[in-house]
Image (cartoon, rainbow, N blue to C red; front, side):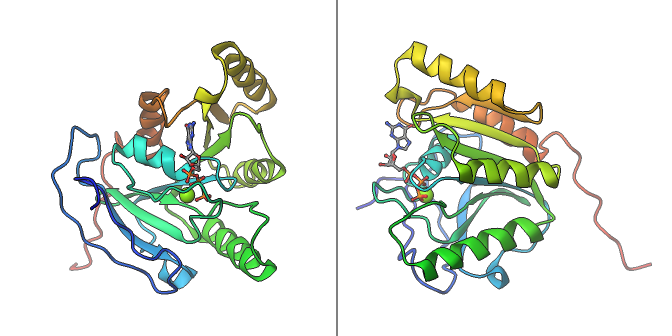
Amino acid sequence: MPAAGAVRIEDPSASKPQIIHTSWAVPMSQFPDARFILSANAPAQFLPDRGSEVAVAGRSNAGKSSAINVIVNRRQFARTSKTPGRTQLVNFFELRPDQRLVDLPGYGFARVSDKVRDHWGRLLQEYFESRESLAGLLLVVDIRRRLTAFDEQMLTFAESVSLPVHLLLTKADKLKRGQAATAHLEVARALTDRVSVQLFSALNRKGVDEAREVLNRFLGEMKPPRPVANNRG
Ligand SMILES: Nc1nc2c(ncn2[C@@H]2O[C@H](COP(=O)(O)OP(=O)(O)OP(=O)(O)O)[C@@H](O)[C@H]2O)c(=O)[nH]1
Ligand SMILES: [Mg+2]
């Protein structure tokens, strides 16, 4: 039995999008109406490209899905796993009307076939190149590993399209406080002004409020809604 309020995502490896409608009693949350919409295995399955969307990217097993769960305040909202490569599809979550969070497949997982890895790479590339509604990127980095070549590529890409990036140095609970502070400082120093960085832990919820603030800023919560086109002359 899933815990009350948990979302059950069935067979994440299925090739068709899975639309799961859920309703449940929700604890205090900034995102009371958040819901999983679908997992896309191909660009044709991506949700309509309107409103604003924040993508969560990072190396496989970095802690992306866990971060989403604590930020949205739901257990197993995004599916987590000890096995790297759990998130193999582009998972769309609606946080509020026309505001989405997207859990991307973790890159850099060695133990998959070249064919599967190529597919992930193409899916990610097409996602980043096509999404007009993409308003920001949450880049999730395991604090013990620091930035990998893949993270650097993501940063370069984001810079090239002027996409704001916020970096979550997650699993901060794995380091002593001083070590975590040093890692934070070193990573922040190495980044350009366009990238903000914070310590985060899905385990003890360190940095959750800060991450929510950034997410809301990226989603443009304070912006007035876009005017609706009126074609009736
Ligand atoms: N101690 C600790 N463990 C964490 C934290 N965040 C994630 N983990 C663990 O790290 C593992 C991977 O977490 P996921 O959230 O599934 O990682 P992911 O980046 O979504 O992985 P993929 O979907 O495979 O790319 C799981 O065993 C989590 O429990 C954290 O902040 N602290
Ligand atoms: Mg995941």
